[in-house]
Image (cartoon, rainbow, N blue to C red; front, side):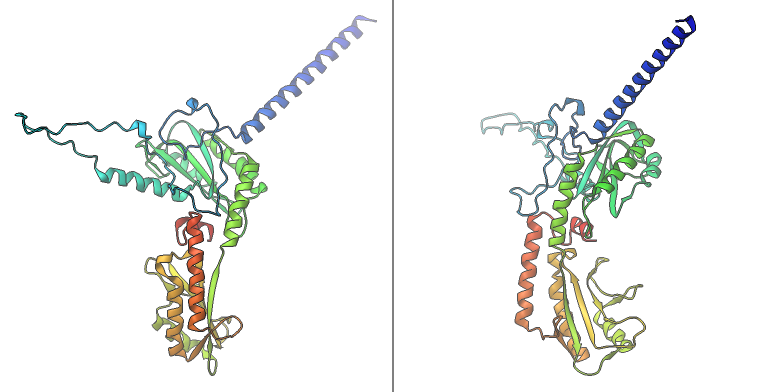
Length: 390
């Protein structure tokens, strides 16, 4: 064997060892990336009270699947920044002077001002309405250093939807309050959240995979490290929540049928405006609730090209109207008023007349429906309900 052949064999061996080592290195990097993306051993920022460093937590946070079939034993709103009891200094103790004491009694120590606690609660409530532990998958982001809202807002705007599920971000302000990220704010921590379900679908695997990919891109741009929950657990929670939404997606309608000739649309417009209805740009008639929303809607059951209609339908979106507004009672009262104006009869979907007894029975069912939603901590008309049933 010549020197040239020995040299070539040696060079080939070195090349093969180099390729093998490079492949092993790439395999190790990919494995660590996957483990980091789908690791479940993380500290849940929103559900932790106080500001103990993450490094001090030795036990992983257990993810608990939300329940929607029974009322919780103790109803407590999630806390975003309230200090633990041990962090609150004890109030000074002072003894009441006895009758024999010659000294002047010491002045009483004033209790902490109530408005401070109210401000903290308001800030937490505003943050919870955007990133809600009950209906969102929580996505904590650890920041390398405090960041300004002006710098990160343009980046966050690129991740607002995954499929049809909204994505929101909040930040822990340097003043200690969780709040929506705004211009001028400076934040030491961040929390993202993607809604687990909507009226139409639950968050699915493709949407979640897209979310993880896009979230990592956003995190790289703002200098953050996301903690991504396990996909299988998130999918289970999403399906559970969607089953609740689908089981409580109730819309109640009562119909008015003319007792004579069909109504002219022009005549109806006048009568409906006198009754208090607003006409929306899309042609819908809605009854305002006085706070910018509406109690129920009305349909003429014909296209805009038609000039007459023999039937009107009043429709109540039950989970979107708070019980205190008595949307069903208001809708029935409106229907009875229109009976007098239009010479009509209140009927069901099969044109059978609805008696007062039948309407009262339906009202009782609506009351039970509201109780079920309260038991699941998703009261009808609440921010949670409006997000889920939008």
